[in-house]
Image 1 (spheres, one colour):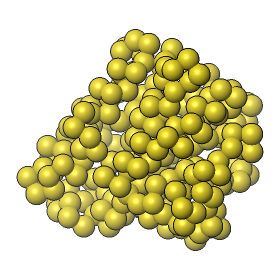
Image 2 (tube, helix red, strand yellow):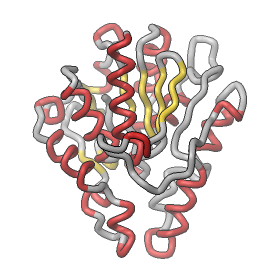
Image 3 (cartoon, one colour):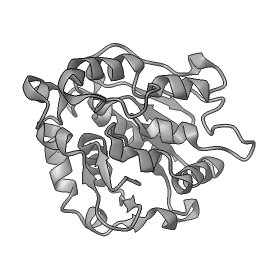
Image 4 (cartoon, helix red, strand yellow):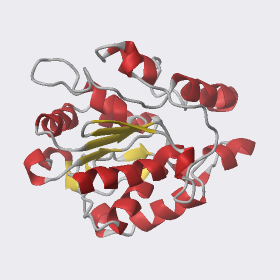
Length: 245
């Protein structure tokens, strides 16, 4: 599970981490410099979100999972990005986040090459939210995206623009990682624009007791999800994918 130095989403890392470990998997994390990363503080604390904090920040499940993850050896002693070798691991999980600290992660040639190597090896890859953008930007040997010819979901334009419109008056472009919405860029890299699926509209976050609230999309060994509200279903279905492998 590679993460940036800052601004990754606490729920999209902590919840899948907890679910994978509970299933008996060893999760290894990686950062640019081998030092522990730090999640987006606004998503952790809700500070600056005003009355929208209870809706937009990590909920109790996400906060507990993130706090527990930060005490684990995998989080405290991560690999470096340039130490990721597809041959050394069984699978790859790409979490997301939307704040500007995500850009080095999303734009990293090192991570894009590593992601392409996992796809080329036929190993399971899971991506949620902006993790799907990292996957889409990773190129196969033919020069096309590793997602070309596959179906995927990811943070939808409707979700991204709603969060931005609700907070832009006092937070500016905090919710706009790039001027181009994620969905728009990812669609442009697929074989067909309709290969990006938005899933059902939902404002409710999932949980282990309510996996049906989440949405994921599986295409072979590739699993994708949209936002923190899909994290429990995302982690659970990745465990299922790994078990079948």
